[in-house]
Image (cartoon, rainbow, N blue to C red; front, side, top):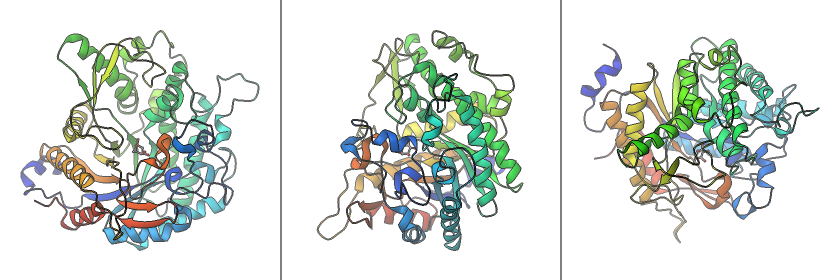
Length: 474
Ligand code: FCB
């Protein structure tokens, strides 16, 4: 019998399994700042955030939470929380400013210092190679103009990514045991190239499907590059944001809407990565946009390189019905078939519904549909309008409730036999929330962006207690 089979009976109360990994997560562009220091060149997010009207209040990541200069303080905060793991991302334009050519030593040195400091604090580093900060040079159209624009719709970007993965693995492979290739390729492809609400802000539905494929290819090529450079026992992973899709009713048309969104939101990545194939219904649904001839022989085999775990980011469920929605949308080809319904219940400051059942549904569904692969929750958390009171305290009871409910859902999934190995709370710090700029606070540590002062919120103390007891308080 495997350890997983033993878990449902073995869990007393709301205790988590021994060795469960408790982490926090961040991403380079959202926290680092130091945008022009030590050789870093602009990424697509630097360009996008400078484009009027794209990011709320005209905010940019130029300074962000100034983590580049306050890294030691931030690691000390995590040590106080008692986290076992920390998920950060490496900024590609810090390491390879134009996305091609030799590495910048100072860029690599920053991550080496971070990793050494984490290890000295007893915290396991978990490195993500791509959390959306593509070097701007790679987004620019190719010389000669033969390819359809640059960025992820261009095949070469996948090859460049694998080279970059090898560079980082060579530099940090002796001290980082857990690696993630991509964070949420769905957002990179469809928010970046279809709806255009994320960098690079293009609204080209056909190109977004090319982007999705090249992200799958980039992932597979990077897995190969990582395996070639890393010790045999390194853990190599991918983080997706699979959608917990619900049909509004059981009517066939609504169920078909859910099937479409499951194809475009989930199986577009899960099928290539775990089964080495494209979903047939996705190819049929998008026939009006592309014939998928950019998928070359052997690509899907590369995309399906074995990985050691799958990272899951979950915030809220997606409810759909038969209908239409206005473009430009992040759902290429579904505009005439699907409408999105607001899920009921309380909402976070993002206006996202609080619905922990969605996480349980997602985890059990993934367990049923995938080969045996351990799952890790690589992001979960909530934004609320937090502020420091006159005594300097930050009370965030709604976030504590959100976290409690979602961790209880993870616990239920464990008890149902789902192999979940860890939970990373998004986020350690308030940070640059993409198109929302600094207006949305996801941190369990409050950041006063004027002074860069850090204040652990009540939720930070609550999380420290959960970690200390390896379980939820009653
Ligand atoms: C996820 C992103 C992360 C953060 C959260 C709120 O989609 O991966 O960077 O912005 O949403």
